[in-house]
Amino acid sequence: MINPFTRILGFLDHRFNLHEDRAEEPVIVESIRKNVDFKGVNLWALIFAIFIASIGLNVNSTAVIIGAMLISPIMGPVMGIGLGIGINDLDLVKKGGRNLLIATIISVITSTIYFSISPLHEAQSELLARTSPSIWDVFIAFFGGLAGMVAASRKEKTNVVPGVAIATALMPPLCTAGFGIATGHWYYFIGALYLYFINSVFIAIATYLMTRYLKLHHKQFEEPGIERKVTRYMIAIVIITIIPSIVMAYRIVDKSIFEANANKFIEEQFQHLKTQVVSKSFKYSRKEKSIEVLLLGEHLDKSKQDSIRKNLADYKLSDVKLHIRQGLDAKQQLDLSQIKASILEDVFSSRKHTDTVIQTKSKAVNPNPNVFKEMRVLYPTLQSLSINHAVIYSGGDSILKDTVPVAVTSFKTRIRKADQVKLQTWLRTRLRNDSLKLVVTTSF
Image (cartoon, rainbow, N blue to C red; front, top):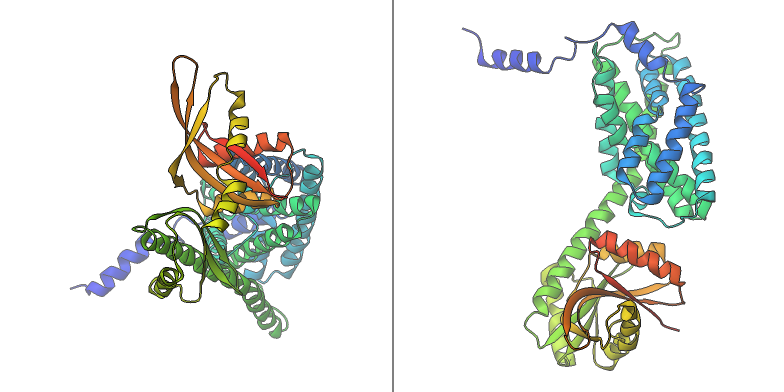
């Protein structure tokens, strides 16, 4: 009788066997080796792909960015480096590294040229997503590299390699780096290059591991110490690459937990009071975490405020400072960014109806905090954002009633009319509401 454990092992070996449909070793090596060189067709394809990806990032089009990643041949040198390490072919490693460096420099120069001449200099969400890499990007690059090497070792080519090109996303970070140079945002440049470095390193590491798993023939070094030295270098590079990404991932998770707890705290602690939370904002940094709420309605005395603050610990916010703005302080804030009737009337003056009356509802619409952060990136002088529903009564003899969302912003300096139009268009697209109106105020 066959041992059940043996039967299970046999089933797993049959299902997960990668040697069954494997191409001949010379075919695998040659298919990767020929994509390492960056000259002629590969070089022109790279330049065209960079332009397409830069345009996609510039206009915030995911589809265009995906198309550029499918065109780009930049994964060739990266997989060549991993294969060279796996089969102990140092000449292939050097060739892959040299061509990857050439491809990187040409890509950054190309994207810098594009963003230097582009009339659009605003950092869209697709571009911002490439500036803060984390440990998840490590996992994506690693598993993408494994999938890419598996696909490259098959007799019949599948759609895995194009999928890997999309998932690991080597192109967009290079374009973002060019944007950082062209606009002087060096934080974008450094963050994007780090993401590109993560992707390249872990695709190469995954290719190396899969090469060894497939037992491709590897050369023997004349000096046995060389292989140990290469292994030590690989481990050092992996550690240097992965540590900052773990730190960034921790901060991302910690910030998300903080914001979730802060939202829950505000919803539950201010729910049954005779006051209304008009706006809320969170500050997260290594030095300080704080919550600021703007209230309208019944005044909360010091004892009530202290009672609310004591409950912060119940929401795992014991180290967070709570700032409550109300009374005169709240009125001053509202004068700038909440309900300036004269400015509201000016915004709606383009409507053809006359005798327009605007009544603001008491319940505010609180957008995702990321919307405010993205706006701050686009317009650094932005101080506050509030979105409320406004009821508009208009018309002559027959009164018409309309309810629309109104976004009220406060800036440190005046912004041009053209920028106001752009900002309103961006907000409508970002919040998916074509009827949203924008009110711009200036506090100086």
